[in-house]
Image 1 (tube, rainbow, N blue to C red):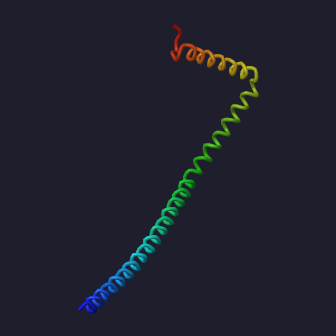
Image 2: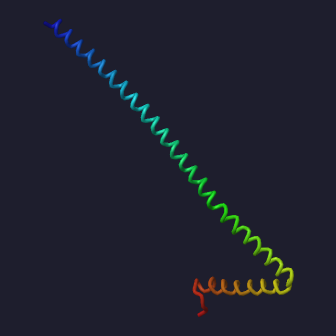
Image 3: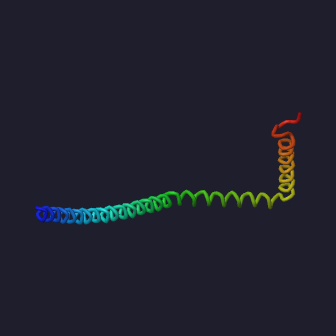
Amino acid sequence: MSDQLMETSQAKIEALEAKILELEAKLEAQVQETGEELHGGRAVLIGNIKNGAERLYKDVSPLVEKYKEEQDEVLRAVGAKICEHPFVSVAAAFGTGLILAKLLENRVCNGGRSHRS
């Protein structure tokens, strides 16, 4: 009877080992499949981000160019006015600097209050 019990136990152990190997193989296949899905999903996400950035660049580029041209026109106009009236420009810059210095002095020297006590 003990030989028969040993054989039955051995058969059950072998069946369990076979089942474990089968489950390990299934688990490995699922891990690989999930990894491929994640990798593919990451590639899709990166592609979507890249496409969105390219569309945004295409949409914003004309606006940037438009305002860059306007900025250049304003700078040329200011430069022309400064060249026409250099002494007035220097005096205006000097006066603006004095006013700003006085305002900052009052603010700093009075502990953040804007007026003198």
